[in-house]
Length: 371
Image (cartoon, rainbow, N blue to C red):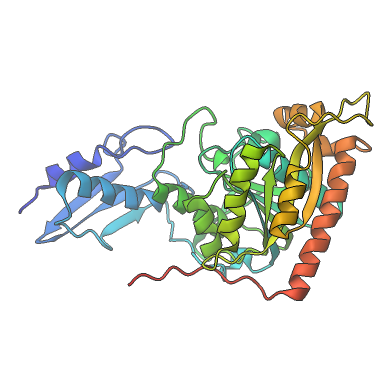
């Protein structure tokens, strides 16, 4: 069956750029369409050299063409990405961006709403307060909240060329180097992406960021188990995973799934332990009082059952919520209940990582083999 350039163009009109929500044809991004027998190609032009979607958009274009025209045309290797003097980024952990990163900590949760990002933010800052060099990747691609929690909304990282590759300079605040997809999109826009687009964006955040020397790279993963989690363990040798949950039975049931995912034989990432968040409610004016709103010792019991450490229990304190909303995390309040809790937590995690590195071999990146 023969196809025309017009048909290809019509199929590509169904592809929208995530940042602008406009179709790529209307944006003038598609040019130089050609067809030679069963092979075809075109040029996909981006206006920004640091556009975080330039790799994932290729896959989305092919998906659109296959949906509307079928799979008769072969576009493999024939979509040219055009940006202002940009070359493709490296896609292996051996890349220069990660060579001086000592430990990668994946912060995960079985379900949303348990305060995973809040834990990741306060933990990263607490680790930095020990004098360690800390980085934080906001890998929650569909719901990036780290820019708000670090008071970095509206910020745009600087981009410079390193060996002809555009590299992102992370933005530092509170002693932590931060990178997030939220730096590249309007915070009010919904990110409606297919899995390929999201995973490609994560790869770019990992490999196209100039991390430099980092003691602990904290990765705030999206809730549940998804392509994002698999992409992380494929791209990075994760030192260990931390599971965040509330003591509530419903949350515990999902936390178990997260544990099983990381410890499965095909993933095999060590679990550093579990953090119980919202363990009890403690009023600021009554620091010795504890009210167990979501049940008591749910994560403690889970840790014992799964034979993994309970790293810490973080209470419900109003300042934690206020700090997240205002972009001034509660761990910054010297001498507070929260500061003390995270100081103990970070010390426990540092010791857990040291023990893990002594007793176990480095984690190997997951390789997915297809027949």
